[in-house]
Amino acid sequence: MINKIDSRLSYVFAGILFFAGLFWLYIALFTKGEFLLIMPGFVSIISAGLIIIKPNLDVTRNLALSSGLYNLIILLYQSYSAFSLIGSNSSSFFSIAAIGYLFGTGVFLFLVLRVHGDPKVFSLS
Image (cartoon, rainbow, N blue to C red; front, side, top):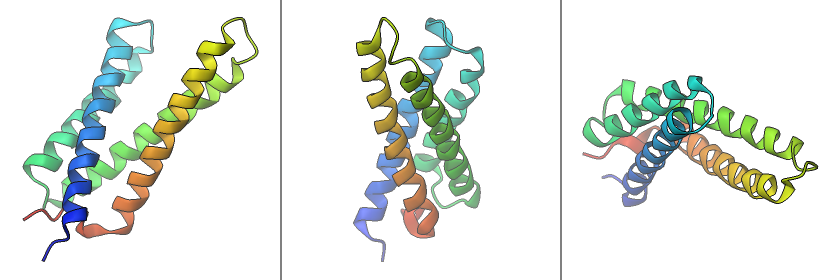
């Protein structure tokens, strides 16, 4: 029998991946962000869709893990960039950005470690 916490965690992971994908697409398309952020945006949204539609496939788990790691690395770099800009004129903005990016990094670190440690997380049937 499947643990309800694991099934809820997979839906939470899918939701966070979906919103992270929307965030990266928004940054890439509507602000002066890097155009390279379009790829993690699409990959995150596709991963979230696969988690909801076909959770029992091996490809789903592998794509979700790689997408989570991709988001983790990008958020970690964004945190580093925001921390390096804290001494500038807009230090309050960069402080808030650094805290937000660090929070996102922590969330993705927890989710990636949880999904990697337990292969039954995507067993929703």
